[in-house]
Amino acid sequence: MPKISIRGEEMPASPIRKYAPLAEAAKQRGVHVYQLNIGQPDLPTPKVALDAIRNIDRTVLEYSPSQGIRSYREKLVGYYAKFNIRLSADDIIITTGGSEAVLFSFLACLNPGDEIIVPEPAYANYMAFAISAGAVIRTIATTIDEGFALPKVEKFEELINERTRAILICNPNNPTGYLYTRREMNQIRDLVKKYDLFLFSDEVYREFIYTGSPYISACHLEGIEQNVVLIDSVSKRYSECGIRIGALITKNKEIRDAVMKFCQARLSPPLIGQIAAEASLDAGEEYQREVYDEYVERRKCLIDGLNRIPGVYSPIPMGAFYTVAKLPVDDSDKFCAWCLTDFQYEGETVFMAPASGFYTTPGAGRNEVRISYVLKKEDLTRALFVLSKALEAYQEKMNKDESEGKDEIS
Image (tube, rainbow, N blue to C red; front, side):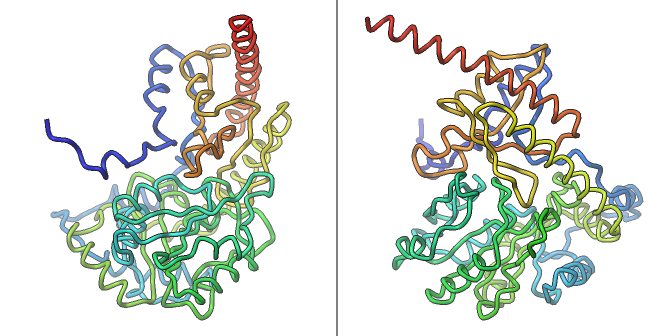
């Protein structure tokens, strides 16, 4: 039988989804599973978007332009202006989700073997997109004990060599919820400028910032306008993960021209998704404020609850709707799987993403998990209680295993 490609072998399984079959099996056994593993908002999609889909009066659902519908791109110019990001419609290319924007950025800017510096823990699919493009991710460690703040410039410079072509950040960050400070963004700007690198900046969570500190976009950084590629998506801000509409934004015409070749090869982004996304821009401030206020409450519920569980620690995330928490377990991969296969409390269990899948450094994140606060507060409160019971039971299991191991040795 023919052998699959090296690329196929090296492609990592999603830490967010890899235990989905175990969760499904638990549900089949009648266990209620609290899904804390995935950033799928449960809040309603804007009514204007749903109405736009219901009221489609076209007789043909045709291809859209490869770069996206112009009326939508023009409308986005006004959206970004609210964040002091000054663009023209031609700076914006609509993609099939933010994922395609990342992939096309890599394909257009990087050669096989080129290296990208990425702070870890990082969104796991960045690695998958890099493998698809033949690029190499070089990670720079951030730690939970330091709140996932960026390391000093010297740590970045230790990684820079003749193959280094780009820095990739996610701000606010998935999976940590960290928000980069002005000092940190200026540090990145100076590195990009000094070494003439690309800066890929994933900013899909800009609406979800829970601090008085300002949101500093890569597009705000002076002197590197031609180096910046901004990644965006409507999935989170409008609870529209399923319509698969993202955007790739850059003032660099050479990058746009290269990206357009890949856009033309895949023909067009989803037509119906663009119709919904364009309508969503009319959802108004009230919709966004209600969504924001709900996440503020959920964040408090989750972080307070986690830090009350003995042995658990989570820093306070300043953005997005995730946190990385340290648990009193030997191996979070084993623990997360065990919660789905061997544990239930009053017919309930929890599904979390092991944080090890967000690191490339061997052994890093081994006792950490990523938790999404995308459930209503009542469910979060109950999920935290079930998690505390799971940790108690797992500790008993570890003690028993250790005791049996000593007995065997003696």
